[in-house]
Image (cartoon, rainbow, N blue to C red; front, side):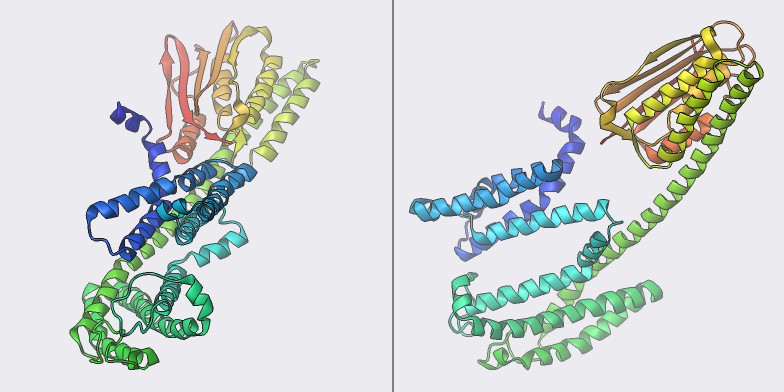
Amino acid sequence: MAAVFIANHYHKIKAMFYCLLPLFAAILLESHIRFLSLRLHAVSGYLNIVLQLFVESLPLLLAHYFASVEQGKRSIVIWLSGFWLYPLTLFLLGESFSFIAVISLFSVQGWVFAMLASFSWFMNRGLKTRHHNRMMQFISRLFSLDAAVLFLLVLWAIAMAGLFNSHVDPMINQPLNPIIDVGLILSEFLRFCNYLWQFTLLALLMGLVYIINRYWFIRQTLAKQGVLAFVMVVMVCLIVLTPILAALALLLPINNIVDFTLLPSGNHNLFDKYNYQFMFALLAVSTPLILAFERQQQDAELAQISRQQMRTELKLLQQQINPHFLFNTLNNLYALTLKKSADAPEMVMQLSNLLRYTVYEGQKEQVTLAQEVAYLQDFIALQQIRVGDKCRLELNWPEGAEHYSLPPLLLIILLENAFKHGIEPESGQSFVRFDLQLKGDTLHLVCENSLSSHTNNHSPGVGLDNLKRRLTLIYPGRHQFECGIKDDKWRVDMHLELTPC
């Protein structure tokens, strides 16, 4: 049963997992820090910490997920309830009842980690959906790889300064217990700042290695000269750059207190093998990350070009459909005016409504299904004026159409073909059946019309080809389209997975 459930809800489970993934990472980070600070060694102890923190963070996970699926004020209220109301309540209870403070692992640090993870996820989603907004474009630059590396290095410098500030004689009492005393940072703020500027310089030296690797080794050498040149230049710079950066690091006052230093080697030897190993590890870790990010950027640019080409092609296809409909309708109106028909003024009004929709709504990327249905109904009313009683219509319209959207002028070609190839050439009785139904998020459409002996029903024109092309571009893998003669009728079956408004 579980396998069947997962198979049926695979996409929803996948979306939920990636939605909660940042919080999973934050909780695991906090669990690891707690495990190290308690100096535990048993796997069972680590698993107990992870499990307890996940249980205590469950309201945060639920608030993050439900805020992600809601919209507007309701989403904000849900998020604030989980990320502010619950932690404040837990902290207040801990102050009132000492046993809660003793057994609880939920801390201000873990709370901050979770909020940053949740905030980052929402910002990332906003970047994907609102690139046209200037503010979002500015924020997207803040979320670039360079900015992320800078943020992590600054965070590392602050954490290391806080760690050293929380211990007496940290250079002598190595290794340090991974605990940061916030109260001691506030009371000994000048000492914290003294550590901070030194660790910031160390972070900048590591950042310099990242900059050289990305903009020289990878972009200039690897991209333009090939793998062999890349390997050689990395080897040369590894040999030359390591002692230079080590010498710069040794100039910091903190490295001249005792024989122990903050170099990977732990001593004053610039050419120690551990310094080279650290530099090699730094390049080995940063290189695949840079390459993956560069590939993602390239793919995003190609996808943007592809989307632009698709929009251009869709516009061209839509422009081919609109004149076809207009010319057919004007021909019908011309025939009525020749007969001095009383239906001509009403037909002009119907045509005006249809052209208004085509000009204004037809230029949008999406309209509601209800708007498209109203447009189809106007078209049918116009056709009924012309064909009179010779055509029997069977119509069925969906309920809840206002809750779904689709591209404009997507369905009209089916009705046009039904009247043009099945009704117009026939002097006797004919019929059109147009059935639209919503089943969940899927639109089911059936369009049938009687066959005419005067028309080649096997080649209904370019209209259906244009429709098929639009469906392929807009709904890749999310539509089904079949058409052909069935039971002496021309029949079209179409299924579309619509987007809720």
